[in-house]
Image (cartoon, rainbow, N blue to C red; front, top):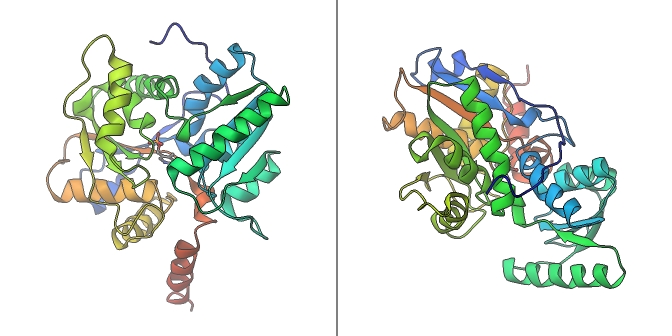
Length: 326
Ligand SMILES: *Cc1c(COP(=O)(O)O)cnc(C)c1O
């Protein structure tokens, strides 16, 4: 479905692929086995995987004559922050419909949303269906005001958005032709779906982060569209063991993975996505699903601003620091 859609450029490509020999050794892999695809370094709005998807969804919005981008998410949504940045870059208005109540101080992604010029609609403490209903009302209101709104889907993960990671997967393959496994966080699913389309289902290991109720189903819907008219692959590799008490909650394996990556490579992970993906990689090595001698790439999808808006992680960081005061 590539050719019938238009894409805008929002950053410089390719992102770096860097070795992680000290982390590899700490995990029991060979020093040349583990590499990091640095999509956290994408140079727009604080970086992260959502930019690749926005190149396609914004391209589609512009082709349809839109002047306002509208999307939704959690208050600490990286996708909302990067939609705000894309709108600024493209000269479009941005409205973010966020699940929560207005806050006095803005931390993490929320601080950047305002700085990047987005307007925020607080939807209150709502579930996914209620948030979608508020979103529909906001879009209808903007249409009445002649603001030409375009709805950017949850997490940017429409089939068109996922094309950004078909691009990303091809880019990675040119950098690592002998790739055995790319490990990536699964939130709304577009990133993993695009990577599977580019690399094949055997070479992508997704780690479910708890953002959707049924990750297998979410992935299946996206893959069906990305492969049409061919049949979608049957058995994408998916780990569902890292969610813990829920999407935004910090877990012990995530804390350990975050500390390990930071102390072996100076690589900063976030507590919601990349920390879970790394905890999944650690578990996959322990269980022999990822083996020494195979080229493994950890796809760093960004999310750093979220660390500074995550109260539980910041409290834990305070404890870690207190234990090291000299
Ligand atoms: C959204 C997000 C993901 C997950 O990507 P999806 O395409 O939604 O599955 C992973 N990491 C970070 C930092 C994200 O913000």
